[in-house]
Length: 334
Image 1 (cartoon, rainbow, N blue to C red):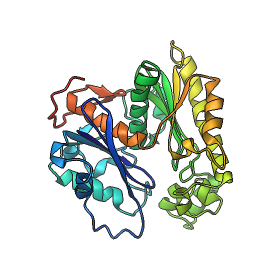
Image 2 (spheres, helix red, strand yellow):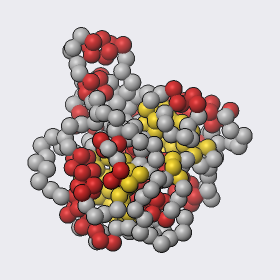
Image 3 (cartoon, one colour):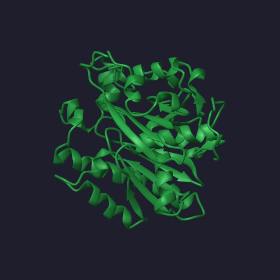
């Protein structure tokens, strides 16, 4: 069995896949400021799978910009981030899970986010020190898996997420070549006014990162992200996803000889049909370009579990991200 952990904005999402890469279980640990942290991740995991049967686990922690290959957790310093500078909540749920895995006997690898040191990136995208968090690598890995089923394999596609942090990744020849994000419910690029507040001491780095998105800018409380957002917020999520995908299209069309094969949508908001049919509107818009598919829940965690399997069976890379020295137990074929 292989376990994948998605360090998302609202919780730690976990999926288990078998030797064939089929998901056999999943669960979520909510992130909450009121959590007393008197629980054990491995105890919760044991309710879903025999921990001693886990051949490999994989976790993506926050930005994941401190390393550039899929690596044994024992070799990672600082949980794989250069520094936090507001990149995430201070609730501690993700930190607890990460640290417990590192202390455990479960073979575990970490996978990075998409940042300027990844060897597969197009030179344009290397201009940015960080493009996406590690969860979007897992999202893209899951998209590749499903396209093997839906489209009889696809190596040139866009994977787009619509959730607390929304973005699109571009895959060419099976490798991540770039990613684009601008706006989401929680996160967004800070504008000049946000930078002025930072300069004047009215906000700190955490505010700059966490309050640039749609929720804070429209005076919604953070907890609003956990339910079904109201129509105004859903409308913004829809437009943001259009923006992210269309921003990738010039590279998909002009930096590669083969045509774009598919778009895969993921993230909780991409599946919402009421009060606004986000799912239908997005698929209608993108079907004019290429076949478009919508992933089910726990897709990103499943992608992380597939990364664990890839590492365990001896893959040289995942989506162009090198696989370093990892603790392998599985006797499987790539």
